[in-house]
Length: 219
Image (tube, rainbow, N blue to C red; front, side):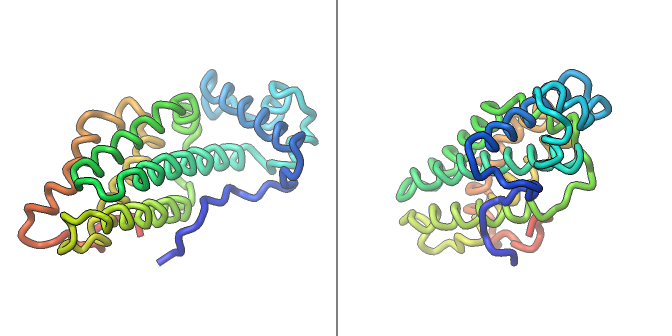
């Protein structure tokens, strides 16, 4: 199993050690988002991104080798945002009832995506099915760790294998993120999606046998 760690974005050629460099990267990514939303992936080129961001192409290449790295960085950045928001929700729910925990996680997950709707739309329009699964594995591991700690704090779950429950929850969240990138938020982030998340505890609680932790596609 991969160690839970921060979602490291693709390493740019020149690390943003100073505020100016960080601002440059932010401006370049914003330009990429604008182009993707307006014209889709076919309109996205490093030359056009550089022009829209106000920098020379050579400056852009100091940070991103090609347009695929731009999209990959947007993906990593959004997943990091989702993981951070869900982890905070898990921390705030320590000691709560399991149903309240699950509802809080679902609320945080939906709110985090809606908050960054422009980013999600841009990623969807530029999405490549060849995206490395590693980033999703890392996200799943971090979500699993946070929810395991949360579930373990509930007296109601003392006799429950909380690691298996956390694995199921993390897998659903990560699978949903992949669907959001592939299908778009309107199709993938629905009331049915929320119901699937909040039903995790109910299904686990009433099942005669526990969930099989190996059944998920996210490991």
